[in-house]
Length: 144
Image 1 (spheres, rainbow, N blue to C red):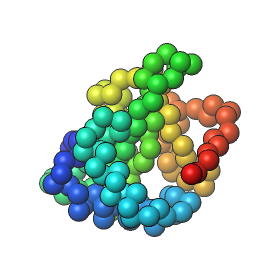
Image 2 (image 1 turned 120 degrees about the vertical axis):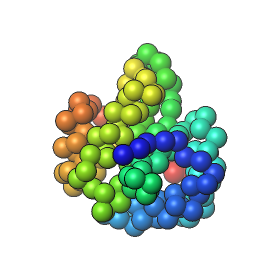
Image 3 (image 1 turned 30 degrees about the vertical axis):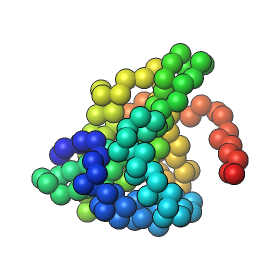
């Protein structure tokens, strides 16, 4: 098992996996392909967000995305776990847990946040084992 930052060479496999992710039951709706293409460029820069490739013996098993934001309440620059996708054939093999531990070690922050759909029982159980707790806030958004 290997975890590394995304590179330009990963463009095609990332776009394939992100399309798989957005057509899966793990998300509420798909997004335009252009959003994923633009995001890839941002992840390669690695300034405001990072994407990590999860590998198993040279094969790509999935990806994870984090973004950064500053929070006065939290005391500094925080990390939001934006997406985690592990391909079906690699699930239940510890990739999710390893990914979180990798980020905790390599991207220290005073607070880590994530969102999870209530129906995603397996993901929720992993997050709780890793120490995540519900904060009692309601997540709201406004799309432009």
